[in-house]
Length: 336
View 1 (cartoon, rainbow, N blue to C red):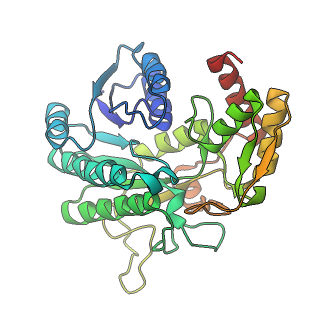
View 2: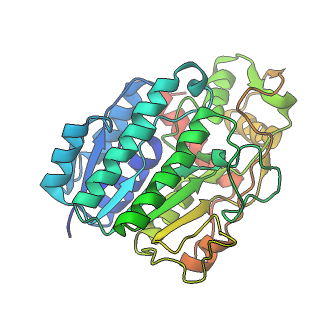
């Protein structure tokens, strides 16, 4: 089997995806810049797991390194590119906007150019539920307009979808964007809410609950996310023959470009999730109830009907089971 490229292979989603592909006998080239946005030791621990596979090759490379990215694509001519790398984080984008331009805009353009010049047959890339921004119609549908982002991070992810569409239209490059909804599970990112809650609960510190705890999130377990990505790989978009510029559908195109939501399609009350963490750790959390943060939204809820129809995906991990897997990993990794 030809090499598949997984970008961000030392990141949360990229690591799980690469490990699944490798475990099924696939050959994977992984790239990551191993930056210090969060503790690099966690990234290195993930990477160490991947390097136990003989069918894995790693290159430390920054997406914004144009020459390095060109050389990578010339060496391998990847048939499939699974682009999971990005500068993540809504709140971090308020303080470090240029990091998002470098990674999520310039870096994504380097991915597109590499795919175009390397005759890639399918680019699957990570988008985000954050693109729904100021939308209040629930559940969020890929067929709804998403032109009102409320964070720079969300704007860069929307820009990725638009850039991909232009390459699909101009060069016939098949691209599929996946809008992930609040992914969680073992080997989680320590900047995310559930990890921060776990840190605070185990240390006896208070947790911060924004919007006074009245948040609902479509928590999606990493195993379900990887299953969705796997199913989409062979679902190469051909273009929608019914698409019309007179009434344009936001989730498809007459070009070989497609957008899907990847979510659990069952929003959970944040306070319920906190209770599950309290049960898992056997400790009651001290709670600071705070107002809404800039760039945040009160609720996410994914309409996954298109993904169900096209690839037969259905989420399998309930929140109770998912939190249990996260707590078990956290206890083991941190020796709690």
